Image (tube, rainbow, N blue to C red):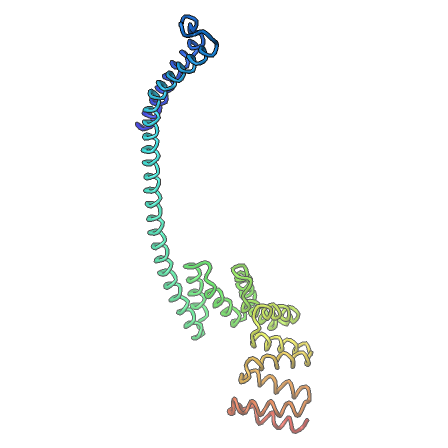
Length: 296
């Protein structure tokens, strides 16, 4: 504030000096040049006027220059101090922001750990078929972290396994709001549709899951849907793709054997049983399938 007042006083003083000097300039125009004995011609007059103007200008410069130096020094000090204050504030803000970020990260890690522990408890309870307590734990995890995808997926799967299809669908649809590019969410909805007999919806959801991730499990799910709609050729195509991705999956080989028997393809059925025997020789269905194949 004091610096600003000083600056204003200097400007006012400079304005006053300029006013006085400019006021005296008209007197130069009425100099009595004729009274000088040397002023014989117009040329001499001009020379005298020029010399006097030069002297006045030099006087002006000598008087004004110190003020400009003072103003310059003042401005350098003022804006220099101002800049230093700004830099100090910036550093203070950066330090505060850094501290807040560290605290936020620390709190996030703590919350994430707590949520993970609750989800782990929910999974253990689900394995013990303790549906009610598992549901409570998943909901507790969601209350700790409203966007925890793992907690929502666990809850949706819990509802699905307990045939609470409406609750499962609601949970999966909420997950889509959090991330609509997750193939497992569409696959979950497809499983529900398949169980409920909504086969066209199941197809659409499996296609959505495959659009995101060309996983064997999605091809297998789609093969199941095609089998239920009696589109056996399409089902065969999908199970073959699934086995190209996971050649030693016993579940997929089981499906392939049954599908080939249904298609009455004796050679393909024998080959599928042989592959299954290599992967899972203890499968109790093998003898039954071999007997069926002989009758084809």
